[in-house]
Amino acid sequence: MSKQLMDLVLPRLAKKLYNELERYRAGRLDESEFALCFENLLQGQHSWLMKRGVSDVRAALALHGAVLVLSMPGLKAEAAETGQPVEVVEFRAIRDAAADVASNYSISESQAANQISRLVARYSS
Image (cartoon, rainbow, N blue to C red):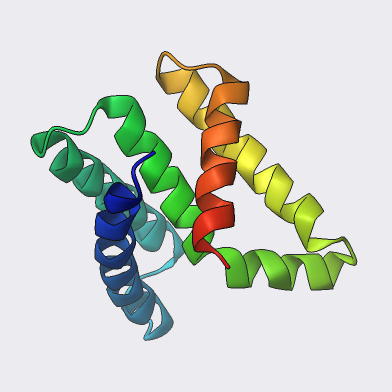
């Protein structure tokens, strides 16, 4: 996965997600509205990447990886709350993301997990 792709995806996704989180925290969105906005945001980012020549699979992997990188504080908090190592919580999140990609695109779950893991390792440190 190209480092350049994640350099495009992370800031765009972070900025838009932050705006939606602010609306949620301010009470302008309820939980279901936030979930819908988040889904629409990801679909929009996916379309934006595809219009720039990125394949379906690469776009999905990049977006899943970016979401996990941006979710790292929440994953760490979950690990602390449950008393589990961060790596266990992170692995479960990666596995779930890989299963989602594999169910929608022509890539195996293990290939997806491998690529998402590399993105998370590279960008979350």
